[in-house]
Amino acid sequence: MDLAIGLLQGALMYTIPLWLAAMGELVQQRAGTWGLGIEGTMLMGAFVSYFITLKTEAILLGILSGLLVGIITGLFMALFIVILGRSQVVTGIGLNILAAGLTSFLFVELITKVYNRVPYVELMHVVKVPLLSRVPVLGPVFFENCSVTYGVFLLFPVLGIILYKTSFGLKNRAVGESAEKCNALGINVIKTRTLSVLFAYTLAGLSGATLVLGSTGSFTHGMTAGRGFLAIAIVIVSNWTLLGVAIIGFLFGITQSGQQILQIFTPQIPWQLLLAIPYIFGISALIVGALRARQPSELGIPFLRQR
Image (cartoon, rainbow, N blue to C red; front, side, top):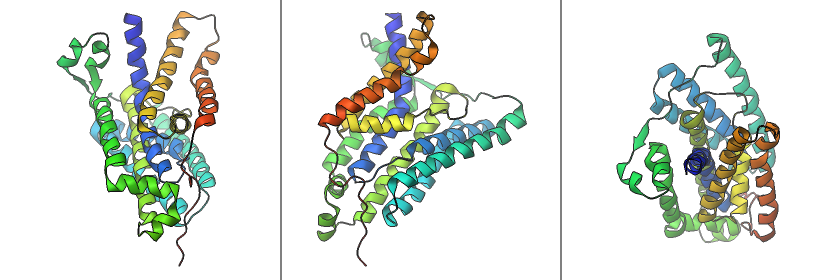
């Protein structure tokens, strides 16, 4: 029982950043654009939130700084891929390369050279919900969690209402299916897609912040380790559904938590092989999921309003 609880607690910790990034990516892709730069945004959000928290000793400022990074990169990406209609693939990869180099440089200059070590920051405060402790089996898993964890669980139904019960959600899904028809009906395609990009990258910045402040307590070079691309895979495998994102995202968290437990109990297996398990699962799920997936009709196709 204790092993199962540890597995689920670890899975939840790893899943929260994936859920945040995947929810944003879902909204953006349903509107017709790829969010290929969320890996770099998560990395920059992780570094900036770590640095701000280290300097101010205020976790709230660290979280807000991660959100700000997401907003800034979202504005940058919306300008290029939505307004100017530039290549979504090239722009996203370029952002990821920039983020990898910039965060590594700043980490060396602002952290390791100053402190001669990698200091740890205080993790998010744990919120105890006594009522949850009485729930059989799952009670101990959810009894003690940071407020962001509970916030993410609340975000799922809120996002579901926005996507499927509001005019904005209808417009967001419609422009991903036929931007030209939406434009003819008077829907502002550029505005709708810009808002979807901003939402996606804001959550990506928050995802990076939770990765540092919710689990590790420190920053390392390339610490996102492909989680942004896993979030993209989650959206595709889930067939662009919010429920699918919740389920598939948690399965990714289970594999991540499970490989760490296996490292403890199976030392004879090379740890490098175990570390690859989540990514092997991701590639396999992507191959299987792609066979039945139906992506938005105009995903990746830029819309340039005639002048």
